Length: 77
Image (tube, rainbow, N blue to C red; front, top):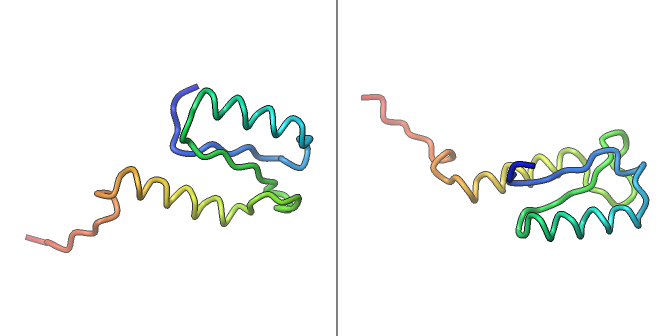
């Protein structure tokens, strides 16, 4: 698996709490410092972040790692 800025597990409503703990442990060991989120795009239920919150987190993560992408330039010369 390639390094990513953020990992998201969708359909988390189908993953047991025990499996979520296992996945969290594996990802923390293999990719320390990379946020891992569980969500259910269907309903966002079960204590998981909703899609909108995940997109906000992803944009913020990219903003932190590549701030030059978010500095608008209005120089038209």
